[in-house]
Amino acid sequence: MPPDNYAYVIPVDQKLHTEDKPFCDHALTPDCLCREDQSVIQQINSYVQEGLLIVEEAERTWKGQMR
Image (cartoon, rainbow, N blue to C red; front, side):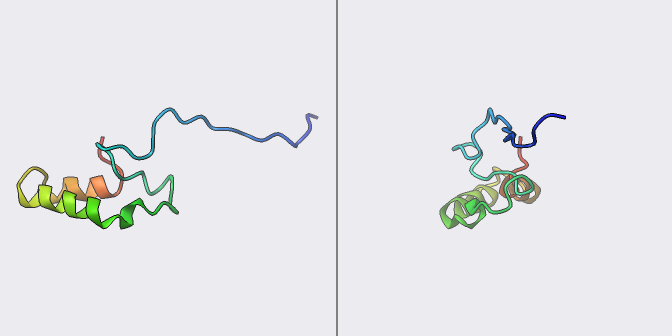
């Protein structure tokens, strides 16, 4: 039986937050505070007001689910 003192590392190839994807997936990072960033939330709201995003797209963006 192998020893049980190994640390498992899961490599991540993508950044959690980028300019194009300001919110991470809440299911993967529930403690992240990115959803509280009012400046980004206001930016996404302005995209909805300008017709660049529909409400469903804005919600998916906020949840970190836009691809």
